[in-house]
Amino acid sequence: MRYLSALVMSLSLASCSIMSSTPVLNEILASKGDTRPFDTPLPVNTAHKKLAIGYSTTVGVKEDGTVWSWGSDYDGSLGNGRKPTQQPIPTPIAGMTDFVEVAGTGSHFLALRKDGTVWAWGDNKYGQLGYSTTKNYSATPQQVMGLKDIVSVATGYEFSLALDKQGTVYMSGVSKLWKINVDKPYEQLNNLGFRAIAQHENTIKIITNTAHVILMKADGELVSCCDGTVKEFPKNVVDIAMASVATYFLLSNGLVFAEGQNRGGGYLGQGDFTSHTGLVQVKNIGKVKSINANSGSGVALDEKGRIWQWGANVRYPLIAGVQSNYEPLPVHIKTFANALTVQSGSANSVLLDDGHVYFWGREIGGGRGTGKVRAHEQSSSKDWSVPEKSLWMWK
Image 1 (tube, helix red, strand yellow):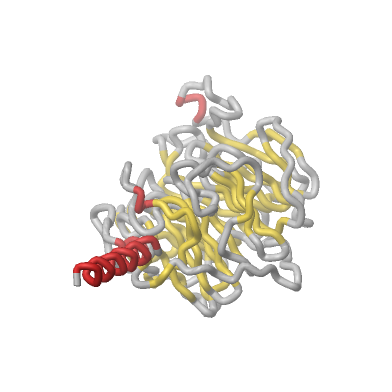
Image 2 (cartoon, one colour):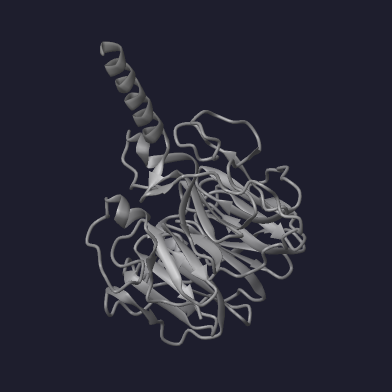
């Protein structure tokens, strides 16, 4: 009897061990995805960005070319003249029509118009708007003079970037990494505007993680910019996403590769928290058609509409020293059979082919556009990791 009791206890402990070692996200197992590659190669992703998810403000551009904003205003980030300063319901920004792309990482935003002009608003403490303001921000979008034939825009927290048809990269603001404008006082930054900092022909897209910049050509070739370094990139890349700690490459065969930091956070999706040198394949996912990244995690959408996420802040907000905030392998968030693409910023989103948009991850101040306002950072796994339908639609 004593032996039987011990055996039952042993089996029970083993069962508990197995259960606890399998990550669970809202009763969905972090199970292995389809790891096979596509038979037919994916095309290079040349689509413009439809969403810019900032700290407490989100900006979106619809298929009809109108630009909308929602969330909480920070230094004019809603672009509505600061009337009101909290806007949980998505609202069009007055006069913003015929636009194709938006960009924004913190509290300033850029919008690219069909005619190749750029408009900017929000925080301007570092001169990142590219035009002079009487205050340290602009609460309404203004055209950035001197920029024309622009094909792609991007932002860091202290700078803005624009790429034109000829492959010229323009920057406004401050970059400590590139040592640009670091010695200028604030009053001078306000009047500097955009300046050309690099030239790479045949480039169509500019991507940044607020520090490093990568340019993509129409054939998928990647070019390092703009700090003078020369870097070797993988071949057959169709899309790229940059977190602050890692860079993710989607290849034409639908497999995802990564490089960068992994120790302590599992940012490379290897199932561990140790360092890895060079390029590694993100495990347990394949047949991926869209990738993106926020500050600490990678996000992928596969052909079946399954969303996968790995790294920091997957199931819970980041709390120092709490290991459950990190997922070293891709975790299945949710499945949307009609999902088109994923986009990330301070939070994450998925765009569906019927025009609907769902958000999950970090939110404060109404940045999901649901009409509700959370006064403080949400902390429960349900609030954090369950995609929630926005009132905003991209078409």
